[in-house]
Amino acid sequence: MSNKELENKIAESKLGGGKKRIDAQHNKGKLTARERLEILLDTNSFEEIGGLVTHRSTNFGLDKTKFLGDGVVTGYGTVNGRLIYVYSQDFTVLGGSLAEAHAEKICKIMELAMKNGVPIIGLNDSGGARIQEGVVSLGGYADIFYNNTKASGLVPQLSAIMGPCAGGAVYSPALTDFILMTKNTSYMFVTGPNVVKTVTNEEVSAEELGGADTHMIKSGVTHFACENELETIKNLKKLISYIPQNCEEIPENLHYEFKDEKRLKLNSVVPKNPNQPYEIREVINQLSDPDSFFEVHKEFAENIVVGFSRLAGRSIGVVANQPSVMAGVLDVDASVKGARFVRFCDAFNIPLLVLEDVPGFLPGTDQEWNGIISNGAKLLYAFCEATVPRITVITRKAYGGAYDVMNSKHIGADMNFAWPTAEIAVMGAKGAAEIIFKKEISSAKDPVKKLKEKQEEYATMFANPYNAASRGYVDEVILPSDTREKLIKAFKISENKKVSPIKKKHGNIPL
Ligand code: HXC
Image 1 (tube, rainbow, N blue to C red):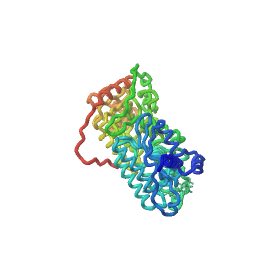
Image 2: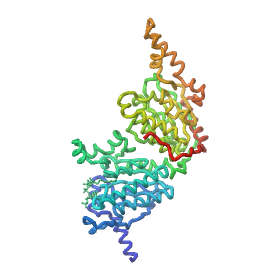
Image 3: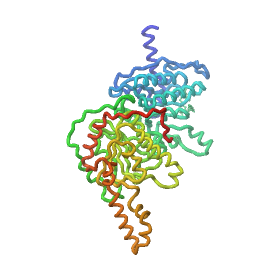
Image 4: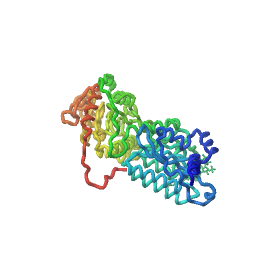
């Protein structure tokens, strides 16, 4: 082949399914596979791998048209200077459908990413298994799932859903660390609206069944629901900035000039009335470097807030009870959300900051029947297992089992601070007094007065941090305004933390 012929072939490979299909893609408000890569990667950094690969099947007319690249653009490039392996499915070629060669290309870059310790980003936009190719398409998916699982915990894997992602195809993103979806143009479901109608007689649109909002608010399948594709790509880039290349590296530390690190506003953030809510994001923002808090799973299980942040330039993971939603109680969804985030941070050497204001686990039949026991245990297990530096600040309530679960000293936290407003007890003073002084209260002349008296007695004993501090369960009671300084120092001294793993095959997290 002459140089000219090669140049023509390369140009052809960049055309995807042709102008008509590209226009159709744009008309739906979507970018093409290559346009997405151009926005994601640093200018001229993309190196394509397998651009001349074609499908091998000749069934159902596939012998007549061959598209170079087989519906997926694969290769590597840099995002803000960081090396990334990437695949981008091309909906203009046979609907981005996945078959033998398409899957082989994805597996090849996954294997390279694993060997070289580099993150993988997948941009998904596909009609699913290529119907004409039959079982090889299913086999191709399984090969990808197998690689996703091998790569899990080894290199970060991020999935952006930019179009359809249906049937078994959903399980590759589900096996990765983070999913980002674009509102109105992407959807994920195991069975689409037509099958749903046939099987359950429910009428539901694709957007309602598996759009970005559904998976952000209802199912928690997606970690980000973005307004449009540009926002999705922007969030991918931001996400990658907090995480390291692989499990043996630490995230990049940004340069930070120390200034006055006192945050006086924190002294008045917790209301005087212990039952009054406040916004935990205010605390997170005060403690973090300016504009550095990047929230994950924002609209799912809002009673817990998780996300990445920076503290004096260092990337950290934040897990915080949210007193302004259901008083920050732990329920099934909040436990699973927290556990998943803790495990990601632990796998990739991102230290953890826990802000605790939790009245306990949510009571009730709904929670019990939906397995608050095993789901709550996931969060407990995730914290117990985590070996990254982990620090807790108790801002207010630390009650019952939730005190233990939320990164207590007893389960391996490195430093535990409490604000003077902390209340650390088996339960709230009123409930406690009603149980342990039941007889005394009911036989009193004025039971209401007696209850109040006993409640105060219990509160004086436990609704403070000093009892826990006297036992060393809390390392220091600190002024809220000093918290940022204390955290910067505490994370600094923990940066060389080493924990020898216990020799076993793997633990058995209560899934
Ligand atoms: C082959 C496909 C295809 C597929 C789409 N196309 N999906 N070709 N295999 N799975 C082709 C179409 O024939 C069409 O080709 C082009 O892609 C664009 O498709 P349209 O239907 O015109 O686009 P649109 O109206 O936007 O609809 C998109 C769609 C629809 C909703 C994704 O195409 C669709 O329902 N496709 C089938 C989805 C599906 O059932 N997939 C299998 C899921 S099961 P032309 O030449 O006309 O442009 C599965 C199992 C995986 O994936 C199991 C793993 C374990």
